Amino acid sequence: MKQEDIIRHIDHTMLKPIADWDSIKKLCREAILYKTASICIPSCYVKRVKETFQDQVNICTVVGFPLGYCNTAAKLAETKQAIADGASEIDMVINICDVKNKEFDKVEEEIRALKECCGEKILKVIIETCYLTNEEKIRICQAVTNGGADYIKTSTGFGTGGATIEDVRLMKEYVGSQVKIKAAGGIKSVKDMEDFLEAGCERLGTSSGIALLQGKESGGY
Image (cartoon, rainbow, N blue to C red):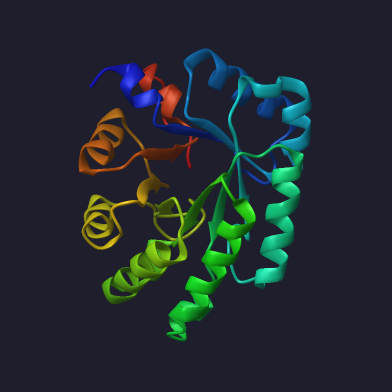
């Protein structure tokens, strides 16, 4: 697989709690140079990036991150502010407590509410597969589909495990045909990126994708 064919699927990511402005600027410049799908950054930097780089970068940010169990009103407020500040894509974390309580209708309602808030902007739904049974993953695939989200995403990168090929294949089988798949967390090699893309992913969330393609060591997320 050609390098440019991989890079165009990467959400170039910097979500570490110690991310400073210099690291965010570096991320943006790399995204512009290599033409990644987006940058994925903390919401506190969205407005500053938009003012500095204008439309040179496609800005993605996270909502309810990384644990997901804040209430829907809080997630809606985060989403509205992020879009107002210049974000084009929102990666939200589901409320896993609702999943464990088998309240899948609440999961679906929250997804639908955030998608309505996003409008034409892209909504990706992080389900944090490392905490879920296969039955729960299947039910969430249905909730993501019925809620109208654009993507289902495997992981935050902050849980006990990241994306696996098995989970991507399960999502591919059970999610609606209009829902795309994003793998994130634990992508540690060029082969990993190729394998996830070949398994059906449209996006890859990684902080180290460009470094890996340049032959440098993996950096994490």
